[in-house]
Length: 387
Image (tube, rainbow, N blue to C red):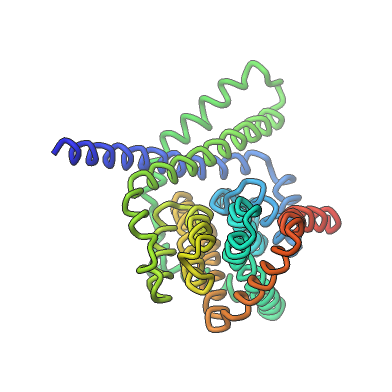
């Protein structure tokens, strides 16, 4: 009885902490939007011009996510920027695609822990990079198709479908969606952005109103990103703690006997812990140990890709903005499109991952080269060249 009471207390404590950090997450999203509005038109025009090149946007998404080790962080900031009008929906969609690629770096890093044990490494590396190849192949098909439809119709097919869904979601018959989240976060936003940050900066600012506005915007952005990072970190930590025992029981071969089960586990677990990096990385040691095969975890990875879109959905609801909700739906539709294309053709990404793992097992330094070049060097160089 004492043990049960202790477990219930721990569960309740973890859930309360989760709710607290979820609230901080919503506040951070609103602050990101406030910060970018404070930078003024010139900054916004410059950033929109940068992301107007879809390939620059794509590689910004890859690099930002690999550096932050979190697609949730990238997509949440992006949603706040779209809501603030700093980036257009057109500019944001390639960044979302890039974030999807960048998030897979964590799996690859986890697989490197097995590099000294040859057979383990072969299985672990293949299990990790199948996610990479799925996202590479999805972008290779969907981005050109999206750009082609954008050229013909003025808007890409992802934007067309996502904006239609956003309109249905935000209102019926012209009625606007009144976000309860905005009402809950408004007092904290007003206190932080309207009083605390300007109050702290006042002794250091000159008489120029424009410069003061810029300074408040910069400090607000730094604070908002730090708060967002903190909130996401602890949301994941406390939700994982709350379901830790259940997760251990979930990760057995039974749940991966069928593709539908694997897909459902990946989607639900990722939606709960708010991190595809966490859920897909958990599968890598299971593949390394031979408990699961690369074929079994592929549907699970696809499910995790869908589950991770929940973060952008929550962020868009916090803004109450139709364009922000459009970006969140575009993220969801991109992952659904990738699944529809590549699950029937799953032999392609699986075979590519297995062949790459075979090569990297023979020449293990090549695995490190792949990690650095694919996720850091190529995106960084292409952003530099294109700009």
